[in-house]
Image (cartoon, rainbow, N blue to C red; front, top):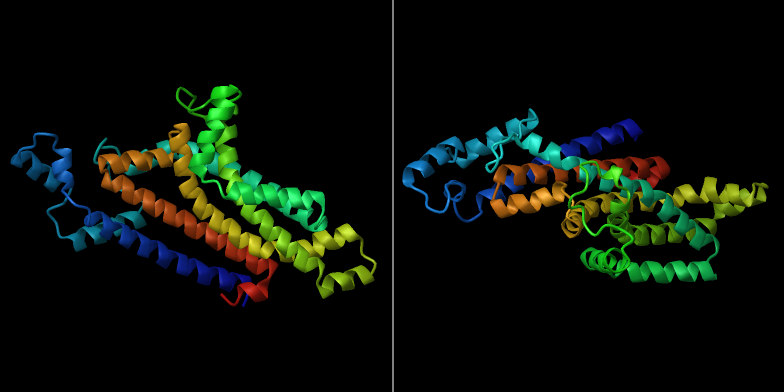
Length: 316
């Protein structure tokens, strides 16, 4: 199967998955107890105000009609309006997107070289001191939940030592203007993914270095590092690419935790506030956005795996 055909097949499957997630999100929000109109009407609502709100929110229409209209709006880029602020949901998401993009982007940017480098180093010096140290550190870090690690880092490096700001309260809108603020959140976000991906790369490199094609390349007179980087590493990266996609899934939840711990006004904080205020359109839009991001990350990982190891990827 050609790469183009494989990509189209996976893309169509991804579209179906996003539609399925959007439908599930709509059903779950419909099943929430209570009435959004009553919540928005205030502490002492009257029937007339509730009736006007239900009409404005189209809650008087059948659920199937609202579901079809919502999906049609999503297809056209219309995410509806916030029940709390009255602003378009797209604008609300756009306001919270930059901090999340900065955190997620920097995490992925640092994750690949750090994890691949650590995995290759541990495999090349297998059984040595470096390998044992890296293995011990990765196992220990992976066992610590993100929330607990964040609290410990804040208590030690922000409160006790004063090296970094403890939260983003009062920080500029562009977090890159205050890099020190990003150090602790990035350490929390990188800790577990680096552990899992580096161990996968290590295992893949050890298998590849012991394979027949690597031995044949050495017999042909190729240099040791050329064999390691040009022949062994691509085969070791195929499973790591899949783990990187799963890391992107985890990163969405990790960002929510990190933004809560460090009070960063991104999509994670927006989701927490929307759930507390029962701002259903914002919640639905965020869930669909996270689903689309997950599908896109998995599609990219599948294409990378197919390019690195076509036979293994083509069986999925």
